[in-house]
Image: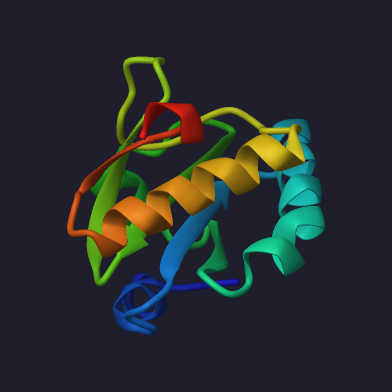
Length: 130
């Protein structure tokens, strides 16, 4: 869990071979649902992704920088670059709904990781769209 913009930036620069995923949220049902999914997939993605939790009430600079106004948001970074994702919603910056399908989330993170490693800064969100 990060509590400052400085810590958040340090995490993004951290491990260069993993996808850094930031979950930001406010205290809400949507946040609790997303956290439950993250808890259940943590072991499955630990070899290629790291999840960081950002409380946007404690790190307000993050809200402005990435326009975080939704109850829950997941964003992906690789080697300190924001990875865009195309899930067909029109918002390619982030996932802004609580994902409850654990396998779908794992698949998305795997695709983001594979495409980011190849130098692509935009990833298609499902394995069938690679």
